[in-house]
Image (cartoon, rainbow, N blue to C red; front, side, top):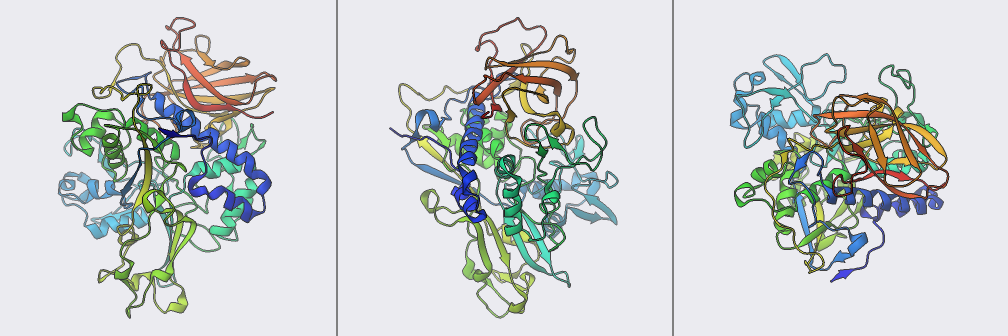
Length: 581
């Protein structure tokens, strides 16, 4: 049995509230149509998996598309995890971390790790070590390269990733702290909102995004503060210039603009946590992970979260989120089909045991926790659908966050609060049927050694590629236009040339002319493992008669025969969409 379903809705059904608050209700229908198309594309891409460069990763037929099959009626499962970044604990606080040559023969204390999460830096034996340094002049903390089947502490090391001004907050929850003049915490802003929501809104009208920033972050935010700008002179622009998106004719949006950057907020000047910024913290990655986890694996390779993630090769090892989400989804999919519950999203859950939170004189501090976006208790099984919240103690209270105790222990770091919280997502189960049976188990994912085909992973305007945009929205193709795009793939023959390259679209009237092949190119964060990726610079022409809607694409290596069937060379979804003319 299934319930008919016609449209994916915005996380926590927030879009109607936002557009009403902004007085821009006339733009809501377009946003809702666009959002449905984007989530539908990510869903189809996630079901396809990766048949191009890997074995045993496709298809993921136990993940269903509710737009096609309706939502199942076999119940909902709520999956929760703690938002403090577990990889910081694993790599720097566990006893084996004493093997890390940067740590001077002993692990960091838990207090050190908590401080590291708040600031992104730590001093060991008088030397400052960083999790992120955009200047390229500081020493980055390193972690072991080999994580499967377990961490090889004696092997090679590499710089910590994901990079970014809050890259280490990779549990689908990020925060920004406001300190008072004495250095005490006055407020902490939490977000679990995906950047795609803001990228989608910006694509329609940047003023809508500006309005949300001015409402939830700071009235001082200006539109130009949100522009994506070039960080160096590149073929499409000069350092400091706005990155112009040719498909909209406007500057692109900077997801790590100065008002959504780092873990410190200075009111009226910079900082804040409007939405997630860490590379893996995307909605498309969440959907992809859930679908990848549905494939059943050999018993010995799926007995726990660590062995399963090593076998299935989805997400990042040792996060609280990815391994746990995948393990629970895998167990649920053992006898059911699953799909992420609408509205698809990650949600903050109310802090636990507020009765044990006390001010210095026993004050009830629950009144200082404010849900600013989303709602409490409206999700499956009574779960919360909170997108954005603030724990803020005003000066009039006579004390600060650092004076508050939780279970009789003073709050010293945001981690003390985060460890009282959970982040959640939900899956809706569907009973298998003769028309849609359970999928046969597969062996562990391995890389192909022959028959490798290019796997398209990111398709964006050339300007956004050189502007380092991490957008995961499908590229916007407009009928009657020609624009230059960059297509990032994994698994292309490195001897490909513009003359031997072949890029195909599933819709007649869209053609591609490759102008340059890049043997090495950067993939979209969170989509691939970051290695073995190539790029094509390509001019895409769209005939005036091409109808609006999603477009599939594929890339053929030079040695592949012409006109392969869909089975011989599958198409990828979710990377391009034709706009209404």
